[in-house]
Length: 151
Image (cartoon, rainbow, N blue to C red):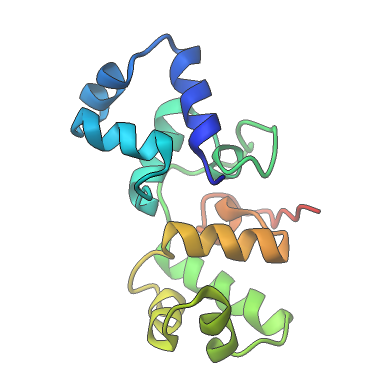
């Protein structure tokens, strides 16, 4: 669905067990196993850790693209820029914070927090936004500068 297939593929490509990878990124093996099966959602900051570890984009992990990495990729999520870009996307598509919140089944105060850069967009919401509007997760998170759109 979101990232399980690619996460497993990348781990196996490096010939790592779930235990090996959990040890490398300092999480409990059961937690990693839940992430790989998607029985638990990976928080966006942790998903970024996986993307950096495997040297791939979040878009690649989400299977939005087969391009593993963008030329101007940055390691860190830029919350302020992410908030600006989410607001721009929302305004470009003429949707209110309230409508976006309804679409995501969350609160308007969460949308305000995302747009102010108070906290990162939750992983499932990021996925839903990118999927609906065909925009790059890496771009929305400020990890790349070029707006990338998918069909």
